[in-house]
Length: 529
Image (cartoon, rainbow, N blue to C red; front, side, top):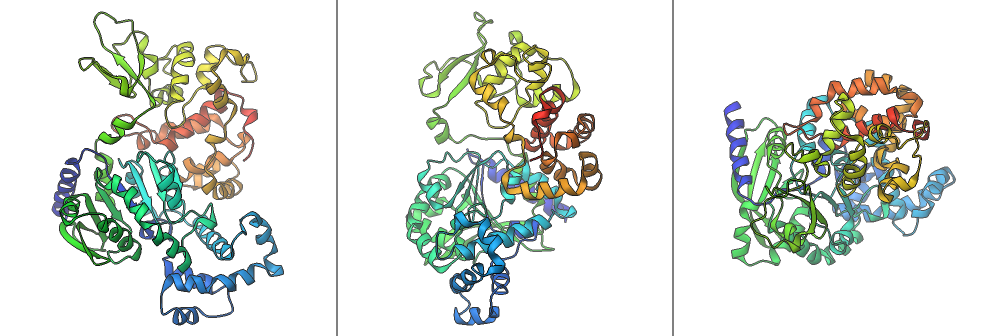
């Protein structure tokens, strides 16, 4: 078995290395079912039918086993239920969302799935898969799932909800999640009834055209679906209708379809999927688990699509390595304005040791995090505040700042800024708002429950997994988080959340930033969420 596994990993890595851009994941309900024990579609409808006066078999037979029709039949019974006296608290909770005839159904869907999510945790045997997924080099994720699992795994990704946001919001295809069937955070966005699917199909051509721009440059990995899944068939059918047979054949190597079969051997073979009278060529991947796939994705080099490079409008910082201009650390220019083909420059982040004053605009957030945890005294704090921190505002993610603000004399004894005029406006706004360090809204309820259960960070560390602690401890009040305990915990698990290039996961970085705030900043401002 090990031999098949090794060969599969090698073959998949070589296949993905052929493309100029990183993969896109197309994730289905099988992903959430595997890691959070979420129900499949029929099981969810059975739960909803259990809230009405009729058995599920009544709705199933009336709808001839058509699941969207079953959901449509549940609209009126669940609307009647929500307007009973017993359900008044739930009605009041969602009063602003009761705007359509099917709103009650979708509120019940959201309540059921959120409750399952609160009670679920990733099985210990599958945590290594999720760790690998967390480090996967994927440019974007498309999903028909409603739940927030993927947002918690990729917390720095921007989320687009529904077809309209994907089609009309000008996404970049980089670090984004497209929830094309809606999100639990907005119940009315859910696509579940026959009427919802009719609207979705009417707009499929627009969605397919948008997806085609992604598929043309990226390999796309379908995971958590069966090959006969109606959602996949509909989308691939619409995609195929936009292309000639010649163009479809070119997509074969780009479309990879993962089939999970317990006890199977790893394999990857070409095949076709029948989709709305079209034969769509794909590569079928069969696996006994997702570990090998996620490991390969985590080991990929990060790639930037050529299209994205051409369209970037934000400023990029470039370090010019010029023997006659050693003191010229950086110049800023728009990508479209680069005309000197002979200029040597570095784009992005990283520490350039040979640059005078260390090149403070090129310092990566992991460098600051390491310095905060290990107190290496590697940086000139005033330079960090004046150069590094304002520049980091243009990058996604959190970064520590209070250690440097305090060391450079910008904070008073209570940890607040002495003079607002000394700090750049954008950085000052970030300093004054710590909400980005809290658990995301999709997991806040669970975070509060864990905080109430364990009373303190020390208690949570004792009884919860490392992943659970990192994701949820931000719900504690500052009095329940001892900085010394947090620091020791972070140092112990640092290697686990740092890749071979020294890059730390976003969740770990956020935890370091909380430590930085509580150790050096105005911790009295950090109250229970």
